[in-house]
Image (cartoon, rainbow, N blue to C red; front, side):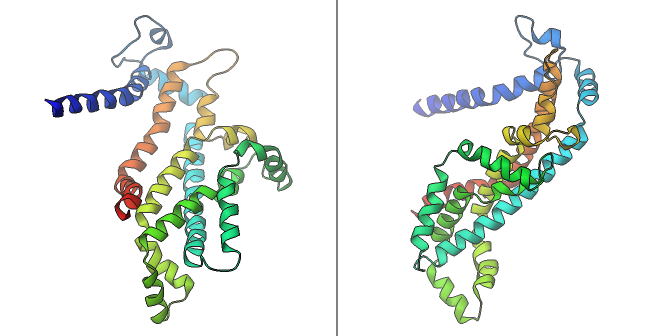
Length: 271
């Protein structure tokens, strides 16, 4: 009896989380008039092709998808490379002079709100000539304090110190040790961090809104938001665009879900 109650609660909670995505998909197939009727539609309608045509009329969808894919993949790859290298340095050389103070500085950056440095960050981007380009969405955020903290903890929990000594006896330098010994062992941690970073970059709206002006450089969230103007809003087209923007996140989770869960549970299994 208790097991059935727990199962029922699990299904109920799952339904609460899944229903908004289902309803978004339903609204993407209805007209704007149907969406604002009472009771609201709960089953798919027949206006999908009309909503698709209006979406393509207003939004340069292929260019926006290309920009989002380019930014999300490039930024994620850069974060994984830099954070794993720096995390390896902090894990491997914990007793180096000044290492503890540098580590405390990295930890302190995690607790500084991003908005605090927004104006100096914008001035720097402007002086570099990166306004209305994709570079501010790829490079500055790659130096990420949380990502370094995550990779250091994964390396400490996953790579035994004896492996460093064994690699050195075999003639491996620090770079070869990082590339051939450490990276294969921390793939679950890299997978989890990669999904987090990809999702955050893919759905980012504030920074693209600040630095991008040309529609040809818009990322997908910014392009979809342009459907709502002072003169009206096309809710059905917005819902269809939102469905398209969510699909890559589902695909990324399906492809790397195993690595994601392994990364989340790595620390628990190691105790």
